[in-house]
Image (cartoon, rainbow, N blue to C red; front, top):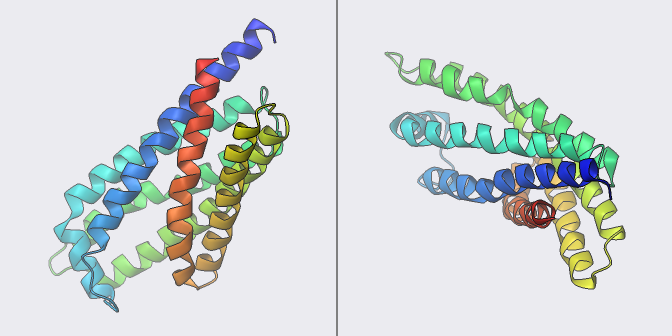
Length: 214
C-alpha cells in the first residue's frame, strides 16, 4: 500500500469514525424528546411539542449536520481507496439528498412554530417535505453503506471483522428497507429501522476507527 493510499484510508476512517459514533447519541436524544408524545397524537400536538423543545431539537440538528457531513466526507474519501466503491458513492449521494432537510427544520419550522398563532398546517407541509428527504436519503445511504460493508467484509482476513462488517451490512440493508417502507406510508417500519440504524452507525464507526489507526 503506497503512502497516498494509506493516508487516504486514515483520513476517510477518521471522518467515518467521528460522524458515525456521534449519530447514535443524536438519535437517542431526538427519540427521548419525541417520546413525550402521547400515542395517536395529532399534528397540533406534534407542533406544540416541537415548539416547546425547539432549542434542544435545533441543537441536535446542528450536531447532526456536522456528523452527516463527516460521514459524507468519509464515504467520498473511500471511493478512490476502498472496496465496495459503488456503495460508498451511493452513501454519499444519499446523505447529500438529506442536506436540504436541515434548513427546512432549523429555519422553516422555527418560523411557523413561533408565529402567532402557530401555523400548524404550514408545519405539517414542511414536515412532509423534510420526511421525504429523510426517508429517500436514508434509503439510499443505508443501502450504500450496506453494499460498501459487504465489499469491505469480502476482503477482510480476520473472521471476527468479517462477522462485524457482515452484521453492519445486514443492519444497514434492513434499515434501508425500513426507510423505504416508511416512505411508502408504513411508518411503523421505522420502529425497526431506527434501532438497526444505530447499530449500523456503530459498526461504521468501528470500521472508521480501524482505518484511522492504520
